[in-house]
Length: 164
Image 1 (cartoon, helix red, strand yellow):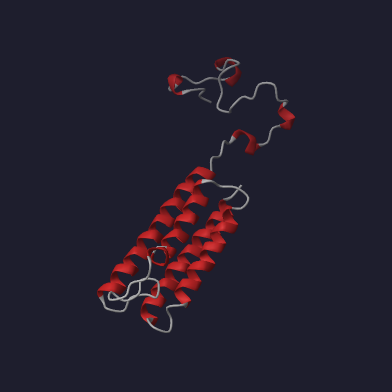
Image 2 (cartoon, rainbow, N blue to C red; image 1 turned 90 degrees about the horizontal axis):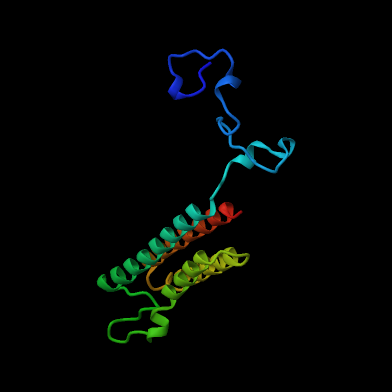
């Protein structure tokens, strides 16, 4: 048995002879009796940060998709109900409503708590309502909005699963 990379080529008959009290391959926990340790105690996990970063990137992607829907629907001449026609546009508050919904979910992602998943679900429901109001006048645009809302639902499910 070889006790470390510094001793490669030199066979050690007894591992205890080459390892001191502070050496070894396992992590030592001072002050905790060995019988209380499990394998998972020695693993430090930071699962919330990578999932929060992924959720943030995903919600920013939803925001970009909504912006693309708004620009595309205006360019093809079939604007969404919340944009209104170019000759008679909706007020700024109505125009920005889908974006406020997504920003609310983005803020809930940055401040995770007990209600963050509930806020995400409410935002998904509101995005579905926004898309449902477009079905009659612009069904093609509404389909894209439903797809964006479905992606937001998937983000919410993954965020709920990653929550500690």
